[in-house]
Length: 140
Image (cartoon, rainbow, N blue to C red; front, top):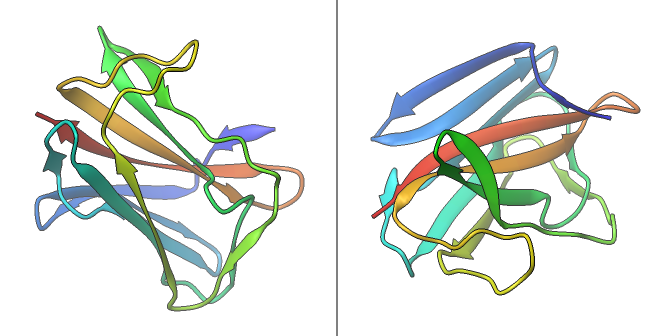
């Protein structure tokens, strides 16, 4: 069951990059893009930093998807289906990813073009729930 974390979630704008700070008992993670905006065709860089006291568990090595705002609705432009090999992010560790902002030729995915985007990242929460973090960026 996938739920959106409703504990204390603070949207913060720092260094002009939108990111989320999630705080739960002993869990504190920062999920952010490196820049607030990118050009179509550039690599969008983003990361998860564990600032908490416990290890953060990811359900796979690429537990993220990218969505574009299309007339007020979020539509998928990149989705990952992984084998489910969990990845552990220890105290003070950071895991980083990048995504080339180009359209993918798969059924059901929307084209990449200038717009507002969001990245959805899944964390393994208390069994059997998942925690979802979201950060946003703009493509120009």
